[in-house]
Every structure is written in structure tokens, then in C-alpha cells.
Length: 436
Image 1 (cartoon, one colour):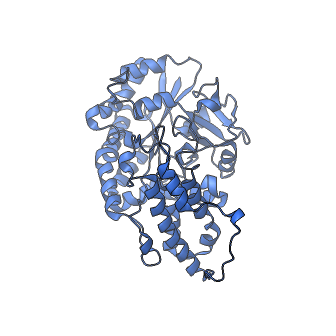
Image 2: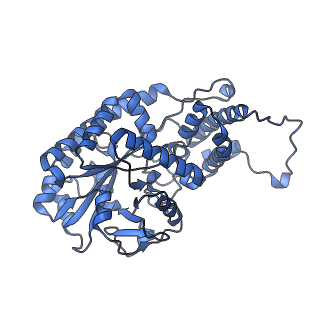
């Protein structure tokens, strides 16, 4: 019998408040408490709570035949614990059924796997411990932020003791191969790799309510017919989605809850598919081959690359500045500095600076608090400047005065962050961004 691996990502960042140049050195509170509280409560009411109730009812109805998996970022868990603890309780109910797998990721939903290996390992350990504390079992499966993966990242993940990792079934990586098999890491074959079926996943995430889509309306019967058209020897279909797809990105009125409530019954009645978690698939399937990913991929955009978060001058300047302080932060004992260090790494801050998609908007535009990538960059850099001052003061690092600083030769000067921001502001946007 073939398998469906149904996995959901749950993530919310700590959004920054408007933080001006004149706040630097004076005000150390960086977060928009009202928006963070408002958004987490809204999404919990529209998506997390009713979706959890739906999944619990399906498990009660179908028993061990229906299974589902989640990764929940540390920043989301903290906000849920503070503002909507009933969501944590509902996830515990799901955990207690034994039919749900909780997957590890970076605690801050960060890009640390691209910035600093030690920080990456530390965050994964922090997150795995948090999941074990809340839900009673230590994760054995890993998914990186935004499904970012490469051969090297997979090797690090294997060294941390995980046996399975999730990533995108990117066309430029697969070539003629199908995502509907188990693969393994190209460096350490002990790490098994599950690849997202992006066509079927995106049908649910992005196209479900689009009345101009040729396949609208999408019914469970139609969806299962598509599953049945998959070659008989292909072993697993990985449906990897944002959890907000159910109720937030696709509102209740679209029929999304009805679709998922009828999906298991239609699958069991009209196909030879069953539902499995990544951990079950690890024990059930053998890799058909290694998957070679020399350069990082993600589940974002048509390119499935990193350009949603890194690549333009704004993003690279902010990212480089942030991780230049990793060694200093590691020496700090101040818990507030260490907390802010985590929150400032969240990938969303760099996503807001993306210049290639902004005019088009898309599913996540209403979560973006900025009017332009330029504004996002300036606000973040103001916060980061204050943060760096605090770190230096905590370590008693004396900053050189203007008189003490040596001038930089003109031939070695780089364009300033502000000039880079202005340049990006003038640059016409193109393409469509479609990842969290």
C-alpha cells in the first residue's frame, strides 16, 4: 500500500514595532506587542483551533489509519503559550492519540543553517527539547526553515542524530526523477530525505479557492483521481503545507475544512493509499537513490532557491551584520539579549526586505507590516544597531570614537546600507513571492 505523508508547518514571528533612529540607545523594546497578540489570536481562532479539532475528530473516526505531522516554531510556541494556551492544549490532545508526529526545526525559524553552524545546532537542540517538554517525545525527523536543504545541511542534520529530513521536490534538482519516492543524503546516506510534491501541495495551498483555475472547484474525489494517476510503483506522496492554509489563507467559506474532513474517507474508499508519518516512512521505505543538492534549495518561488530571504543588498547587509555578532552573543549571560538574538534571526525579517516580489503581493502580504522593502530594512537595522550596542556594553567593549577610527581608502569602500536601500527602492519589482 502506498502512503500519503500529510505535514503542516506552524510558524508566527515576533514582528518588530516601528523603531526609529532616535530610539537607538534609548529604548530596548523592539516588538509590536499589539500586532503580535492580535495576529496570533486571529489565526488561532480561524485556523489552529478549528483545524486541530478537525484533525482530532478524524483520528477518532479512523483510528490508526489516519496520521498527520507538524512542525511548530519556537517563536510560535511562545506566542501560543502566552496568548492562546488552549491551542497548546489542543496540540497535546493530538499528541496523546499517538497518531501525530512532531518534527524538529530551528527554534527561531531562522536562516542559521546558512549563517553559522554552531548557532544552527544550538537552535535545533533548543527546539527539540521544547517539543519533548510540551508533547512528550523527542523528534527524530527534521525540517529546516522554509524547507531549506543542501547536501551539507543534510550532513549536519544527520550528525545531530536525525534519521529523516523533509525538503522540496525542486524540478531543477530532480530532473526526470519523481518526488514520490524516499531518497537519501548525498554525503551521509543514513539520512533519509522526503521530497514535497509541490504540484499537489500547491493545489491546496494556493489554487484551492481560485475560481479562475481550470480545476476549480477542487473536490476530494478529483484529488484522489489525481493520486490514482500516479505511477503504481511510486511509493509516497508528500503533501507539505502551511497550517494556516486551513482557515486563514483559505477561509472556511472556500470549503477547505470540508475538503480535509472528507479527504481520508475518499482516500480509503477510492485508492490504495494510506496515511503515514515521516518516522513511519523511515522504517517502511528504502531510498531509491541519493539526491544531489550542492546548492541550497527551499520551497519558495518558482526558482525554489534562497532569493526570498537573501541575495539583494538589503538582505545581505542585514544578514551579515546580524551573524557578525554571533561570537559576542555567545559570551553574553543576559537572558534578554539571548532572547532578542533568537527573535532577530527569524527568517521573516529578511523576507520583508525581498525586492523581487513586493508589488505583486500574494498569500502572505497581509502579514507584512511594511510599506516597502526599504522600510523593512531601515527598521530592522535600527533595531539591530541598538541590539549591537547592548551586546557590546554587556561585554564592556569600547567602541572607537570618530577620532580613533581609521579612514577607509576610497578604493575599498562599499556602498552604504542606506544607499543600497535607496537603490532597491527604485528597482522595479518582479515575480511573485509565495512562501512564508
